[in-house]
Image 1: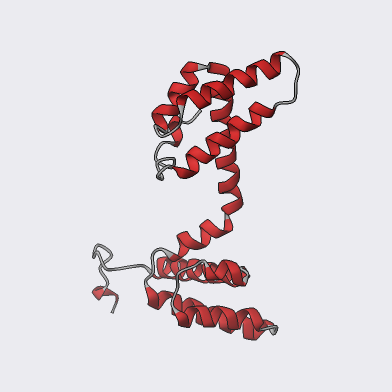
Image 2: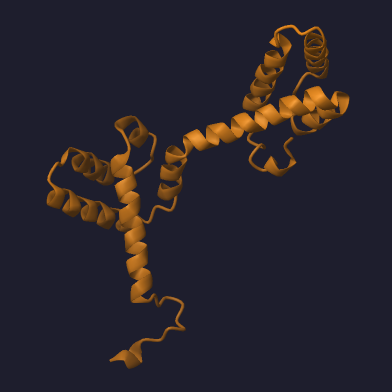
Length: 181
């Protein structure tokens, strides 16, 4: 009976691998159950899956919840939706993504102030829609404020302007994160 099993076949998956995949789907379902209604509405999914998740959120009994989790995993395995895990991870890690973007913008601001025209040119290479003269004026004001020990108004304005430019630009930031300052 085991003679029919050929591990070299492209379609053959070991029992251990199938169990691992099932556990991953079950874990993804548990993460989806933990999301609130607003976060769930951001995920593009089948109506049957959405209804099953909402039902699981209402269940209080441990054994009934366990059965519902397995039902959700069964529904998810039948969908073959490759984008679902990415959507859930994006929602779960949106705070981390926001912090990384914030740090990247701070690095741009610091580079523009510290490096002057070279920093401005580097920023303009990444974001050509930015206004060079406006950015130079903000940098001059920030340097002057720092020299005179005044509150960092222009420093904040540079950050605000850089954030506006980056937000308005097409999504080239994820492709060029290794070039960011």
